[in-house]
Image (cartoon, rainbow, N blue to C red; front, side):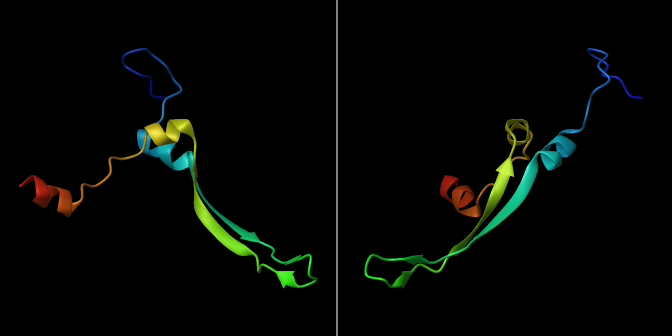
Length: 75
């Protein structure tokens, strides 16, 4: 087993593994439809997707790529 050379801790993980384990893709499908006061059916549901991330995973996220537009602007 590997130990941290600075503090001798045995519970260590690579930053990439912490990031991957703490990040999840999520998607939701919502049932739709309701009845308005006039008796008609309204709404048709919907779909949402995104990413859920633990606080530790967000701290371990890889650096974001810089935009070419920003690089050109700085030149």
